[in-house]
Picture 1 (cartoon, protein in one colour):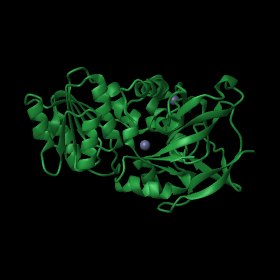
Picture 2: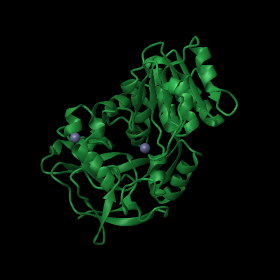
Picture 3: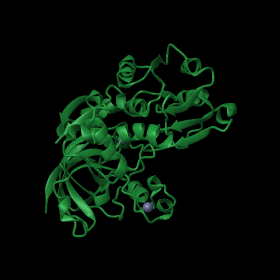
Length: 367
Ligand SMILES: [Zn+2]
Ligand SMILES: [Zn+2]
């Protein structure tokens, strides 16, 4: 059976170890993908630090792109050779949540995520005789991955794979939130608090939708410069200027039609609510400790506001990933700007440290 190199997290806080992993097989509804590139996300760093419940040992990485090289017996042979982006939510289509059109909450998928297993509850990965876990149904810090067929979404073969990998988390979360959840319309006013990879892609999604005013806020000057390049009409240096005042000023005193929070602090959450108008959308994309208490002014929650917290921007991988690849190919979506550096898999720990410190937008690991 196939053996390949992968970066394994053995215990919380430990450096990842490059190991030779043995594959036990490809299940009937699964595909084997040779990974070409993997993005390193803040969530990978959080998992390395032990902030995720996902049991170890496991192979991290949840942004990946590559080529299908083998398929399970129930999958069409025609898939071999497809260029694909990996999706962390290969929803089953038949569970309680899938039937209610909430594929992001698909029960077998989310249970698999919590157990570091594929949605069928098992692992295809071994180190010696030890079972190694799958991270978010993907595990892309590796030369190969086995994923449910639905989790490998075909994109145009013209799309560079070392940029396509970014679509799977950073881009689909940010742009998806603007296009899918908020449904930003032409001339709308948009506020984005936090300009990391997700926030910058909310900026891009809002620009693609034709928003009239896009106010982006961060404390980092480099990120604000990128926000301007990607479509923000106004940037706010949050430690020097008040984003809520700027947003109100730019929206005739009302506040933003759509206010997005991507930074994950109590103060930024408060700012996102305060910057929104009555009847507007407040969309929270960041993460905090689930047990943490936060203070919000009740008035900032009231007035017919629609409030939504989303892990992946309401994305539908099967439709949105090919759409985003096309948006890149026809020049509407910028991706090269997001890549701070490209490194080999052996530099995965440096890349995780950089993601954790916030000193980069994205490091792309190339296999
Ligand atoms: Zn991510
Ligand atoms: Zn389901």
